[in-house]
Length: 92
Image 1 (cartoon, helix red, strand yellow):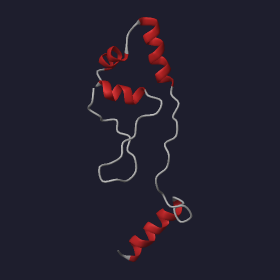
Image 2 (image 1 turned 90 degrees about the vertical axis):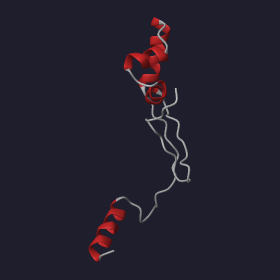
Image 3 (image 1 turned 180 degrees about the vertical axis):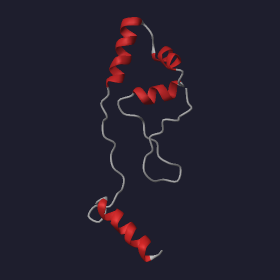
Image 4 (image 1 turned 90 degrees about the horizontal axis):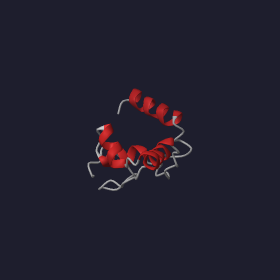
């Protein structure tokens, strides 16, 4: 690593605050969203369930559920590491 590359890396580390507190696993925060309530209201008022809404959006059911959930499910990578929230799940 050249001196310039090292200095740039250290500047980035400093700007991110990682000299005082290194990055690491952090708990996922609740991300409130009006979408889950809207889906519930549509289901109550019109009888259209989430499968119907996903079809109208032309989205796979798994992706639709992830997008409209209050807190998307995080999965652990196969090799370990930090949890990952994927919007590209293919399960229906």
